Amino acid sequence: MKARVLVRLKPGILDVQGASVQRALHGLGFGEVQELRVGKVLELELDGVGGEAARRRIEEMCARLLTNPVIEDYTVEVLA
Image 1 (cartoon, one colour):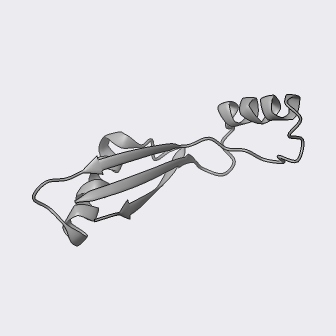
Image 2: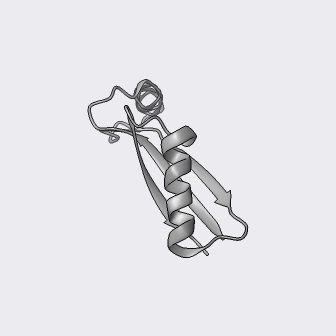
Image 3: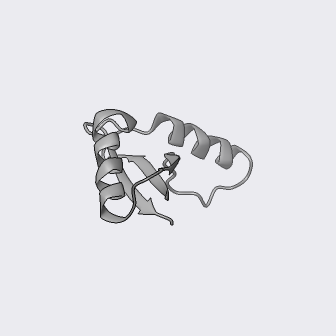
């Protein structure tokens, strides 16, 4: 089974990397970009588990290692 985890900083947490990319885009003439936040994508392939059990395992992985629950939110997408 394949899954994707989208990780983003929580609203209100300063995104230094996003601000830097936004400034660079403005410098390149893309001034219409009003807000930009950078996140990360984690693609997982799980063996021997599927459906709701896979989602629970991924949620556990996120809580224990893949994300920082103090400053990050995440979304799990089960792909197949």
